Image (cartoon, rainbow, N blue to C red; front, side, top):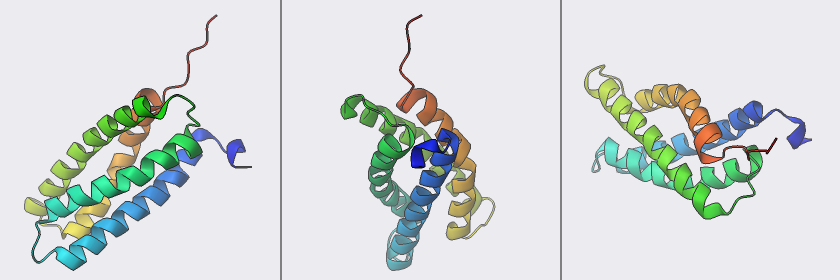
Length: 133
């Protein structure tokens, strides 16, 4: 049944799960350590944890990749670094210049990163195999 769902919807469903997990990790770390650790460091740590979970979910549940995992893992991390750069710079801008609460800013940036993330993973991380004519 899962494979009958279009890839874009699978991406959104798995992405929603990953986003929730990532946001909960960020929130938990921020609430536990935010008095002592800068929110950008917390964002970086939560990113590393969440990306490890996300790779497996995207590889098997969304893009059904069968290529050796090492190459796609490297590309996944490169894609995630682009997303991380977008996320960290956006988080910084919203908190420092927009005076957003870091938890609200993280939610806003996460929503904006969905389209960027799909394009990166669809066309770079897990590209469909090329068929010969």
